[in-house]
Amino acid sequence: MSELFGVDQSGCGHNGYDIPERRKIVIMIQKRASDRSRAYDALLTAGMEAETAELEAHKHVKQAVMHGATLEEIHEAACHAGTGDVTEELLPKTAKLLNLQFLISDKELEKVAFKAPEELIDRDVPVTIINGRNPLMGSIDALKKYRGKAYSLRHGLVQIDDEVEILRQRLKAME
Image 1 (cartoon, rainbow, N blue to C red):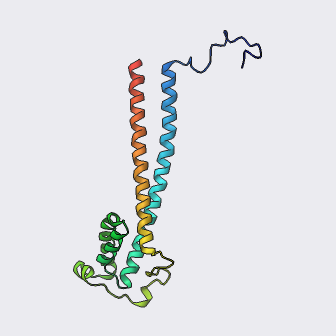
Image 2 (image 1 turned 90 degrees about the horizontal axis):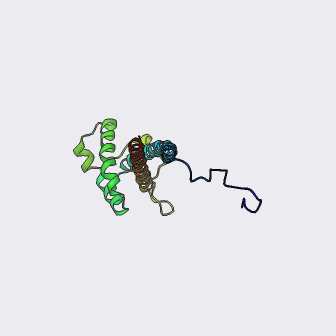
Image 3 (image 1 turned 120 degrees about the horizontal axis):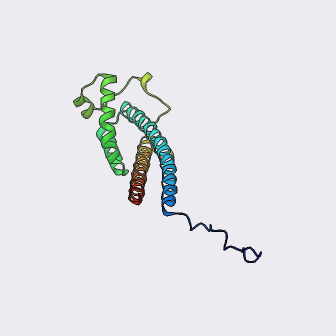
């Protein structure tokens, strides 16, 4: 393009490719540091979303138990929905919370569904399926999605750290 306008490039000395290798590595490290900062922020956000989804899932499990479902039934339904791996971790935590709140033993909680007093049942969180969607299964599915997102972001963060370490080793080798 510069030739069309009659500009002599012989004295310019910079076409983007004449940057020393050391400077290129420093620029790549700076870019990866910026990527790491963005990935870390996204990871924090995903972690908060996962915590919120877990609290919502605990709330829905509690309501399901108050309406008469057992933890075994909830786990079986979650397995059929493809989220059994999440409930294997979620239900023991919820059982401990229910034990503390209602002072029942683990055996009673596992074997028998109890009926809570009417004032403790939240009518805004129905257990029945509405428009083909169960809020309990939806909250467990959301928890699985957010945990998966956080896992992939952690993996990306580790990958960025590894790349920066390799670039630093290359930079050190040049000295």
